[in-house]
Amino acid sequence: MSPLIQKLKYILEACAAGFVYFIFAILDVDKASALGGWLGRTVGPYLGVSKIARNNIKNTFPNLSEENLEKVILEMWDNLGRTAAEHCHLDKFKPHIKDSRVEVSGIQYLEKIRKDGVPALFFSAHLANWEVSSLGASELGINVHLVYRRANNPFFDKLIMKTRDNVNKKLFPKGPKGARAIIKKIKNGDSVAMLVDQKMNDGIAVPFFGRDAMTAPAIAELSMRYKCPIIPVRVERTKGAYFKVTVYPPINNYIHTNKNTDSKIIMTKINEMLENWIKERPEQWLWVHKRWPNS
Image 1 (cartoon, rainbow, N blue to C red):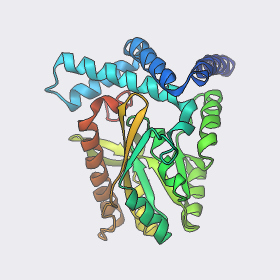
Image 2: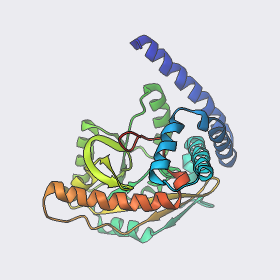
Image 3: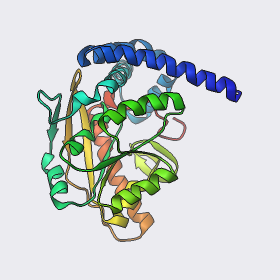
């Protein structure tokens, strides 16, 4: 595809996304979430990436019946549609506002981080509406910087970033430039949050649901280098546009054997925790990602 055609394609995609975004934005959060869920259930199963989801689920849960497999896929698309629609309403999901839609458990671990004044590394996964996961720490006065992956479509990326800027202006893209900025923030005493459940081609092979998956070791390496606690944060969609965020105690991240071995030990612990979260609510994970070889 020529650069001009590719650019036109990106512009058309961004315009379509902008129109849908506008519709979601003028609706209240419950109606927007419900419409997004309906669109996800109606359109999602017919998209090509559903084949990736189906293969991933089959390989992960080989004993799952065909009926239940299709149910997981349908509910996954419902969740993804809701998550997309809720994106323009992120300011409604701050945990500490009146009539909050987010219940927070384990807030004492956030308060300890704030009290100690030490930088922490928070991790979560593409579960439920993952954008909700970092809002609680920021509300408590913890300076948290988010690591994110740029959308392939630069025009669509600008649309997404505009919404994220309304609730969190401390965003850094994955890559060398973002990594340098993150290290500078950690040295200044600020915390960092990242999603650690996606494939990194030049990462390390770590078991995930019994199969090696290329995994980014950055969070382990940063924790050992700068003595930062690693804090797991889980998001669950409880019903409609309501969520539960669970903050867990820090995992043991100072192993002291050697860098490569320690990184794999830490990332194995993290992957095991992610596995447990996904097993409990498989319909809320992003199965359309090519997490394993031959997905």
